[in-house]
Length: 131
Image 1: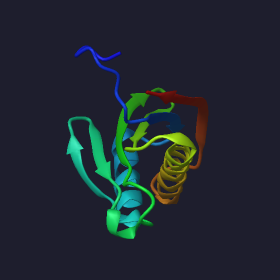
Image 2 (image 1 turned 90 degrees about the vertical axis):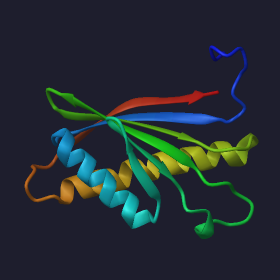
Image 3 (image 1 turned 180 degrees about the horizontal axis):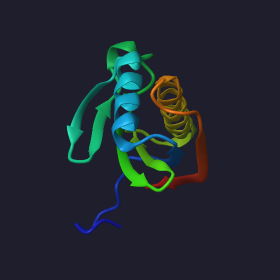
Image 4 (image 1 turned 30 degrees about the horizontal axis):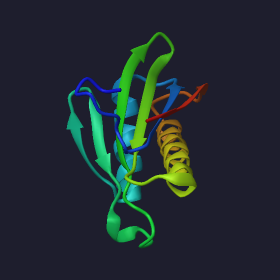
């Protein structure tokens, strides 16, 4: 329950993973991945706020919104992706899972493709459905 006394009706999903690059390299990889997807994004403090382009979607799905957080760690950067979408049921839940996993894969690919950093990424099995 949120502090305002109501439960959010917008389902969300959070996914965390570790990249073996510094936070600046992780942010750069995230921006490249979002540009590749055609998603709009803007800085939101230490995070990136982003939204899927509705023009590229089938008429039966809503655009996903996401925030991507970057926290320096002794192994590189811990990334925290939280995605949300208006809707309910199995289609919305599947869309959330697909978008969170897709963002992780694209960001990782861009981070590993940056020749100024060594290879490596570890994944924390943190996949929570939040309501």
